[in-house]
Image (cartoon, rainbow, N blue to C red; front, top):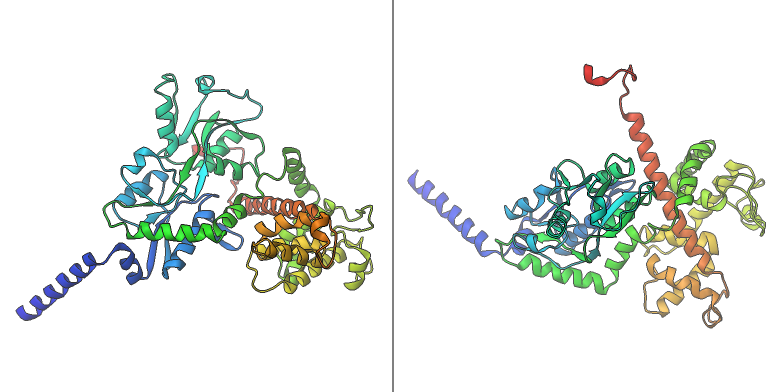
Length: 467
């Protein structure tokens, strides 16, 4: 028995010694898992229509693959919990849209910066726009507890002693922005990236002024370990930048976000309620037939005709999906003004383009390129992709091809192409508008689904607090 105990003790000591000898990076590879703390928000991590999404999720997932391990996510209850968890080494890193600040740098080790943001004071239209911190003393200002916004306000309070605010431990940045939108509170502080995405759906919310200089976002790692993980993160981001992939990811989430103005957004949301119901079944039927999200098809239909079945352009394209006579003939459509035929034809035409594009093109770039071809024609897109390659950029990436498409209207470029002149600016605006319409419709659809799934009180006029 003593021999067995002694053997087990030796094995334990040997394992501890080996663990101590291994670097953090070696331990991660040995265990086959990268543990990452993040948070639920539009700029970090969330569940979208096609699964996990968010810029931080995309970056962390790529880093895990780069290391050859699986990604494990931890979602704490609040932003305040993240840095203490990193200090306690409950995860390998935090990828949570964290701003690099002097105070934070004292307790965690930051990796390389990958994005720059500015902190803004946010208010709602209809109230007077404050020009400086002295103008908000009588208003209610709430910020996330544990955020860099608190540090910024504490610094400003040194010169504005009347400045006061509430630190909210229960709500996210998005939820605080929503309180401003609903006029429950007067002001909040938001990072420019959070505000950009929020304004896609809520055009009444605005930045009054910046309360910080541009600041860097970076991953946080524990100090009480070696720097092997930090060094590998530097290599990873260096590779991501040089390949152009980091720029492409940022464009994917933010490139189209501010495309639609206040009036356009309000009109679109009104038309979702008043027009879409007449055609939604046809869009859903086309989704099943051609494996294309019905909301994307509906977004195309809105861009083409504002969901008007008898729409007609000066060039002769007609119907909800604005099909040409030639395209309708190819698709065996005999009545372009029939909504179901038009929607089916548009979906079938888009599916043909998607199937025709090379398999080397990943999503969502393949969809954006297919939409450009839907608008300008497949062969003009082919010319634009060739120009993109000639410029040393990636013809499989929308961020690069959208820079080349406008060149099709310049003689020095189109005279070298196989298919000649095209109004190349139009497909760029076309695709960016559809991306916005699709995002708005997805948001509205998810909101309606949540509303339908929320139990309703049997007696809605009775104050529920009395029960």
